[in-house]
Length: 147
Image 1 (cartoon, helix red, strand yellow):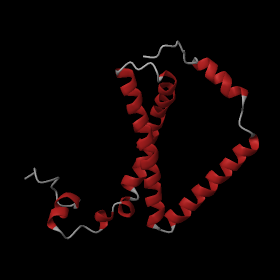
Image 2 (cartoon, rainbow, N blue to C red; image 1 turned 180 degrees about the vertical axis):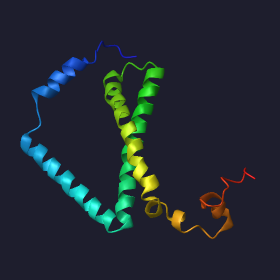
Image 3 (spheres, helix red, strand yellow; image 1 turned 90 degrees about the vertical axis):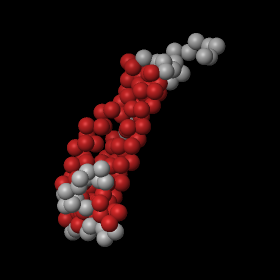
Image 4 (tube, helix red, strand yellow; image 1 turned 120 degrees about the horizontal axis):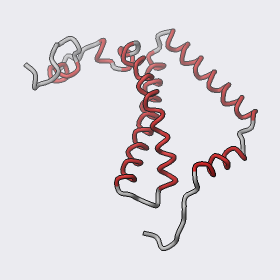
């Protein structure tokens, strides 16, 4: 424990601080333009059947979902151990929980539309019996424990 009394700012104080310094409209327009360009490039790649578009989508999904899950785990550990040093950090990482339902929805295109592009064993089952046991979706078996 620390020897000094330091209190974390309240949520209202943080909101007032953020509202006091708004993001410039030019920066917002530039970020929106970059997002639209990136989405258009992804759509072009997906429509043309380029597997790299779906692989990049999956990597981005993994990146942000892992960060969100790690933030939730950090918040849980801090709450369980009643750590006082991380009160302001815990508020921030608890906000990551808002992304997890969206992450589930963003996973659905990978599972139903792009599974052949992201998971190569879906369209081309492996020839090695050890791998085919686990990676062949049509085998009707889920692993070595099943009969």
